[in-house]
Length: 312
Image 1 (cartoon, rainbow, N blue to C red):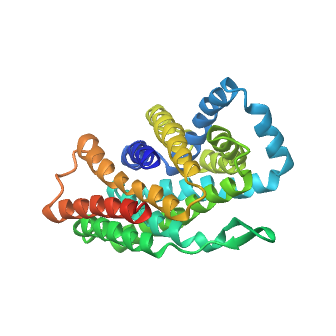
Image 2 (image 1 turned 90 degrees about the horizontal axis):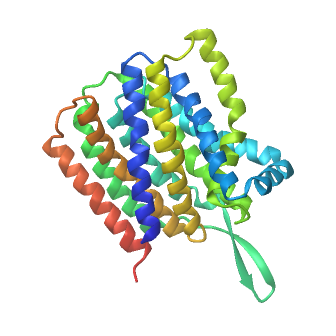
């Protein structure tokens, strides 16, 4: 139960990303700075956390041993995750971005065959390819059906350009985030704690953010003070608090693919939190009856996912 609670708490803080990224775009900020500033602000906080726990040296030693592994999966898990999310916020409202992001529930489940688990046999320790947990996948489909129902009425009034540019980047991000996260968990094999891993991935993703910042300077100029302040808030709430909570939850169940899928399914609550946030900050209309029915389906799917993954 504790990993699921941590996952829901992470969803609450993650929701700030969708709402504030949309607020920044509406007020004239660029997605380029929304993406890069978050990681610039994240690193000092994470450094303080890791140094206070006296765990910085083991992290740096681990990164020096396998620099290309860290660069690759940090680029995938952080770079190909957050840059597309920010790009999508320029073309679609936060609620639609948050709704599309729930594809990560199914994406994470379908990634199972790309990973191996160690099994002790009479002949010694062997590795076997993991299987897709189809029961959990069926519950994920219930959650996505609720998300689709919740967003259908709004999505039907958007232009085709907004739909494709707002959905396809998020669909790519929904694959990159669980893939990069799980690959780094698999590589670390418990040698590093969640704070070290998040800090290491943030540092290893810096080359991408430097390149993106240079591009931003040449195309849109420096970010304005309101965007800097909002990016700082996103970095603390989503980049530090939510990421650490979510990675901690996935670390607790990393040995079980069904349980891992259940934790990832808790992120569907982001839609509920994002809808409430937009109603508050952007004065969005109250959800319709169909949207409320979709929310009920999401909650039902989360409960069923919990039951299927932990039947006892």
